[in-house]
Length: 432
Image 1: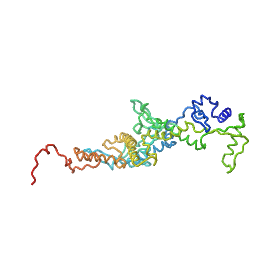
Image 2: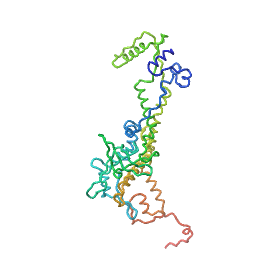
Image 3: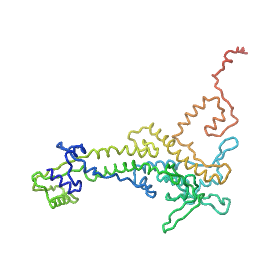
Image 4: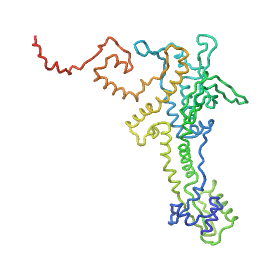
């Protein structure tokens, strides 16, 4: 039995040498239906882990195109962020904010270029930022007209741009991109807006979240592959052995037996046929090893690790399972406060630094979250707080709430039930 098992494993290429009893005791933990210990060496095999690629050109495939969990998280973030409205604003002399409908920046938001909408610019910028850690946008400056020398169109660029210069305490001297037919195309620093995550290893390129979380992404992808292998292989592995023969099978006998099993149990077999063999065979079901069980059990935890990588509330991916209206509503609010708002702020600040300085008139662009239903609960709490804050002027309360200030309203509104100590001790006037 032992020699047949060893020969079978060698024929299958699972283990060149059968494990000793000490190996089985140290490296096993599962038992078959007869109580015999099943070795695990064929599952571990002593190989090093193979991590997903973190090359710049492969990050979008690794962390988005070929990864279901990362795709679900990132696409949820992108579609939510792209739906947030933007506008051009200016601060008036009384510190109030006015939205401008007619301004070059407002026109740029309405039509950034002939082929893309502003939602497309947001999708490209944040998508590359979340996968590659870098997002590049080029500005086209007309040579004539009212916008001569100023950005009149903006276009998204691929994430494979190369930064020239830009080390510690050094200015960026330009950007370049490899052409398909050879050579390089270059741009001046002022032509490119470069958004990036902070990178402790250098200031030239940003640190990709996919590269930082490559271990979690690999574990999540490997767990799904392990489950698919179980489905495709019709269950856990096992070993067939000959109980009627004490002599080990030759290589020709093993090859012929495997060929018979493949041909008989393959596709096209007529229903009702049964195999007929001339000996007594046994089957040892090795079952799922602890490694396999741990892999399958860790799939939900690997998904949560990917969500944590992007500060994404994982409750939004669970569907109706374990979700109620309250926790989904709280998760949607957390999505804006911990994920959407920081991302849009990075894009807004970069665009204002890049575009706003061209005009010098105090006009800036910003996103507007006032119409987001999930954030209205915060306004209810804000209204309740301002209602009792009688020491704050009515006009300042309107500024805090983001509405138009009405100077015709009383400046202070005091509650009628509040009296000072002097008013309590003062004699009352007789009624007329």
